[in-house]
Image 1 (cartoon, helix red, strand yellow):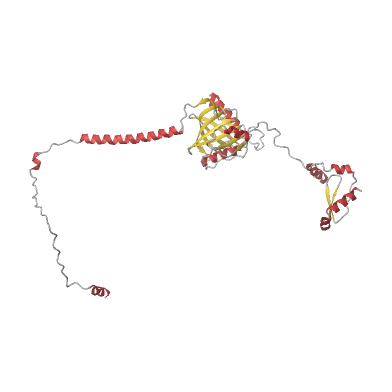
Image 2 (image 1 turned 90 degrees about the vertical axis):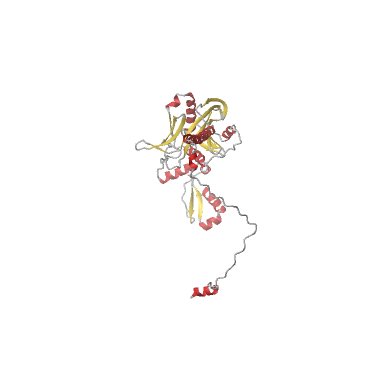
Length: 376
């Protein structure tokens, strides 16, 4: 009885389509639909209206599994790679101010590629104060920040901060090399979690211990992050040399466990560590830090001193040459054989000279005669 009613409703709604294709949709008790072509009879099992009403509640996955069971094929879903939960919700905001050059832009893009838990934002205006960065982090739902600040189109400063409580540190970035350079021959999987290797000096000095904790929280990819891969194939190294922090990135080769540098690489010269985020009381100030303006001033003064020294050397040589020459007294007998020349009387002409007479040469031929001779 229910089959006849269902057949009437389907044919009344799509009579034109059924007349063209000669196909009718029939629902069964198992919740699946089938097509009857050429109005052929289809043998069905008896069912109740309750079963029909419950067919729409089954999800699509159960329908596919039921179809697989009916066909007799075994379909198994592989288990997930890791069943852990993403508990460490660290998100790092990486952006910069206006006025950066191409090398800084490539460095920033490389860090975003290597850190799957990072986020990007538009460039910030240089007129805005640094406290605005905390509001940007709050809007982007980030609790860590790496901010590149460019000055004079040649100096690059990097801020790393724990927003909004702090602490934060300011560095001068030097010797930048990016992933795109030909020297970096290694390669690694995008989104893989890195190993963090620190110099033993980070455990000796208190201010380096604070920076170590900041680097771990910023550069370490959280476990079970959705965008990360469950592989470890590269190492971030932080070493201390020449009162600076040297950053390197190496690939781990599986065959012999050797290291090949990938990039990027840069050197961080610490300036200050602040208690707050992008400001606040100063916890540590680097006594060995020299600003780029002072460094350039020292180079100019050294160049000027070299030029001044060369001029003084030239003057001393001139003075020595003047002292070495001996002044010889004049000899009275030297003018014995000098005979004075006779002085000619000065004649002043008051009238212009007469013109010279013009004598016509008879042996000189006319012009037409000379041309005729040449033609011959």
